[in-house]
Image (cartoon, rainbow, N blue to C red; front, side, top):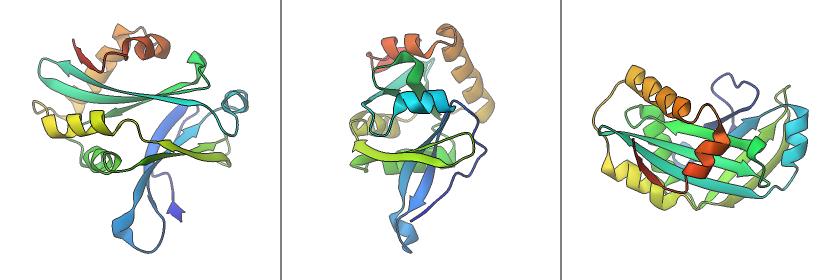
Amino acid sequence: MKCKITEKLDINTICYSKCIPNSDFKKFYIAFFIKDTDAYLSAIGKLPLVQTRAVIYNIDGFKILSLLFRFNDNDDLIYSLWFDYFNIKDRECINKLMKQTDLSFTVVNENNESVTNFKIPNSLIFKIAQFYKEGSKEYNSNIFENLVSAIINEYENDLSKLWDDSTYTYIDM
């Protein structure tokens, strides 16, 4: 299997990457990489309980998708990813995720060494497909970054507040 992180991954971060299970480059899948300190990785464990949420934010017609992952029912172990509808890499990922039956995770330590790998059923397919099919009012990467910052600031940089509010899977702001 060929799988690598294509961007620098900081501590307390999640990202996605294309993974190729064999030599057929048309059959890639998306995997999520989580990098954190040993204390947090220990709390995640080898086979954690993973809760997932997908939220579509609508801000004046600009739509953004957020995927949230919480491990072991612990608000200190919430990781979020934000998807830009007009970013080609993000669109390709969204398109693939809405067809994947499983979500694959690789957890790495501060030295980028794999600590554990696991899969969970993809319960986000419907919401991801909704975001992909609905589209959005057009925006550029600067507007996207400003919108994500505004959402995060609205929740005072507290992912547990974002998690609690994300039970509503479509939020008009």
